[in-house]
Length: 244
Image (cartoon, rainbow, N blue to C red):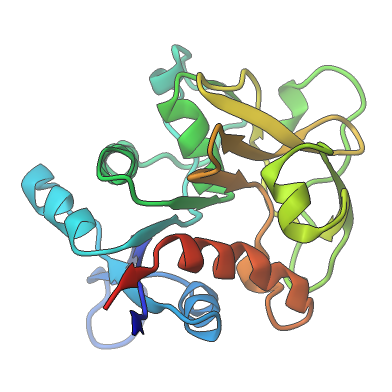
């Protein structure tokens, strides 16, 4: 009998602005991440942000697969740059937390799916770099933030013919939603840019055996309106499966 795998989802932190406890910190992830795991046969566990490395290592040991969720911009000092005027809010402690989650998942041979910031984090952790804002990229760049319509597909992504993702989806062109103002620049060591938008911007990464995959779009926000997007979650869950 196959047990349902436990999928850890990296958590963020929100500061309560209303209610009886303004300024109170709350651990959270968007519910779409949780539902995407449940609907595809996994058991979601939110991994709350913390600053204790031994706790983080143990958190990874207690899950079978990992989703690195979206959130803040990544501290550019991690790829050798100082902050430029158009960078958004950064949270260096979460960068360290997420990188430790990733490192431990790779060390423990557990599959990883990075979404938006998660894909960027994977790239930076492997020695890659980012454009701190879309405006810093030379040449024509399409709109990569479609605003307040998370379940509408507004952009096309072309996948490399031989990529794992192309085989997973069974085709080379996808319609996706995007909400990022930072872009992947130099691709990190051991990673391959396997999906590109029409302007050449990198929208998908994978490593040699596709145990680590990163996508710049938000499949969790599309998993109800475009059932095909469930493939990235079912794939992660299948890779995380263990004998009961």
